[in-house]
Image 1 (tube, rainbow, N blue to C red):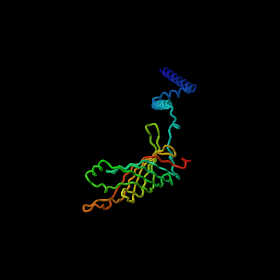
Image 2 (cartoon, helix red, strand yellow):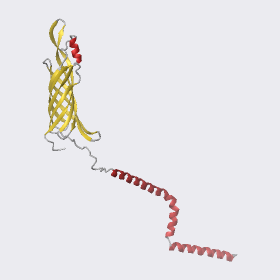
Image 3 (cartoon, rainbow, N blue to C red):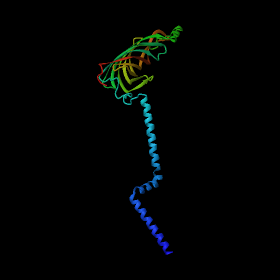
Image 4 (spheres, rainbow, N blue to C red):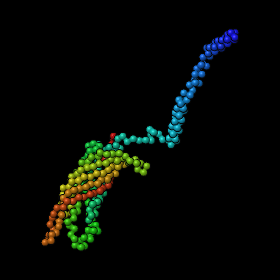
Amino acid sequence: MKSFFQILIFALSMSLISSMSLAQDNPESVYDDFELELEPINEPQKKSVKKKKRVAKRRQAKRGKVNSLKLDPYKDIVTLQRKYLPKTERFELYGSFTYGLNNAFYNNIGAHISAGYYFTEKLGIEASYEFLLDSEREITKGLEKIDIDTRSLVIPESYYGVALKWAPIYGKLAWLNEQILHFDFYIAPSIGMTQTAIGGSELTYGFSMGQNFAISQSLAVRWDLRVGLYTAEVEELTANSNTPVRSSSPTEDVLFSVGLSYFLPEAKYR
C-alpha cells in the first residue's frame, strides 16, 4: 500500500515538472489561453469596430453619389458677402411710369424722374419730380350728367420734393431656379409741394418705400410706392350763389411707380 502511494506521488510530481518545462519552452501558449478566456469580453468592442466600418462605407457611398452629380462644394456654391450693387458715393438717376391708386373719380397716370446721391450704402438723399395726367372715370361722368358739381374733388397735377432714403435691408432670391436676383429695400420720408388742377400749391408730407433689383453693377429695376398727405383748396358752389367758394379739404395721394435706375460713376469696388 505504501509503495502504491509512493508511485502515485512520483507520477504527479513528474507531470507537474513536465508541464512547467513546456510552459517555459512555449510561453506564448499561456497568453493564447488567456486571450481565449477574454474573447467573450472583447466581443462588444469588435462589434463596435464593425459598426464604425459600416458607417464609414455608407458615407463613402454618399460622397460617390455627390461626385456623380459633378458638384464641387467650393466652386458651385456662392455666398453673398458684399452687395452686388454698391451705392456708396454714387449717384442714382431714376425714371418711371406712375399710376394713382386711390382716386375714385379720376385716373392719374404720369411720369416720375428723380436724382439721388448716396453717402453710404444705407443712407442717401433724393430730389424728384412727378407729372400727372388726369381723366374722368365713368362714375364722375355720371355725376356730371345729373348736375352734381365735381369741382370740389382734388385733382393732383404734379409734385416735386426731396426725400431722405434709408436702405436697411439687402439680400438675394432665386428666380424660377434659374437666376439669382440681388435686391435692396428702402424707406424714405419726404417733403415737397403738390400742384392741383385749380392752381393750388400745397405743402405735402410723404412717405415712400420700394426696392431695387440689380441687373448689373450700374443698372437696376426699381418700384416705388409713395403716400402724400396735404390739405388742398377746393371750389364749391353754395346754395345762395353761383359763384364758387374755396374751402380746404384734407387729401391723400397714393402713387405707384416702376422703372429703371442707373448708378454712376462706375463701381470699382464690391
